Image (cartoon, rainbow, N blue to C red):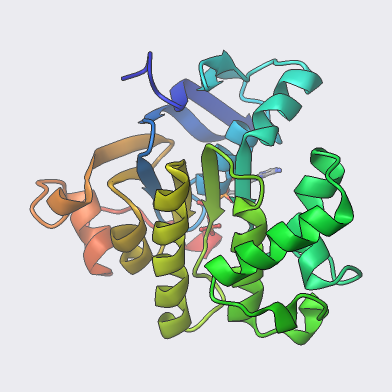
Length: 258
Ligand SMILES: Nc1ncnc2c1ncn2[C@@H]1O[C@H](COP(=O)(O)OP(=O)(O)OP(=O)(O)O)[C@@H](O)[C@H]1O
């Protein structure tokens, strides 16, 4: 798998002072595949994502994106990688100073140098893909509901037709019904692009819907990795406790982090 993987992590270690967060993470995301990294609060999901995006540097291990080593990569190699990716941030992270369409078109105008008129037309088409009409194009993101902001964030993530999509806690902060709408849109948009996706989430309903495969992070390692269809029958007590949400079980939930 690692030769053809779009994203490949090998023996990734990341510490903060004495705190060892990642202690040998191995994970592959294949072409067109959607993988969710699940795990409790503070297990290192965000740290893993930040390492892949180059926002944090692991002290050991390899992270390849499209076959290119990202650990210790030059700024231009990292920018080239980011040019092929789209990202839906937790909380959408839109610029309130720009109208909705310019948020969606940001990567097209700033990254690709596209003319504003053409970029605006594409932005309106992408907004339509996520169920938003042209009337929202000139609105300020601040005037939208949380669910609409997530949709705009998704439209922005897919605007440049990336090969790789990252979703950071896509359903956090919105109600379960809107969360389900976002999950459906993520599946639709990812499929239409033929992109691969890496999602970090602690929302099992979202992971089940979005992902082909789930990888569970615990104590710095992926302790279970398998198809979504095998989650319920998996013989792994850590995964079972996490999936069922039981308080009692082998997961060593460190209450200091909650
Ligand atoms: N920049 C940093 N400096 C020091 N410690 C950090 C830093 N970033 C993360 N950590 C620590 O790494 C651990 C893992 O954090 P991380 O944010 O990856 O957890 P998570 O699994 O994403 O949790 P959540 O679901 O609550 O967001 C935590 O103990 C956190 O305090």
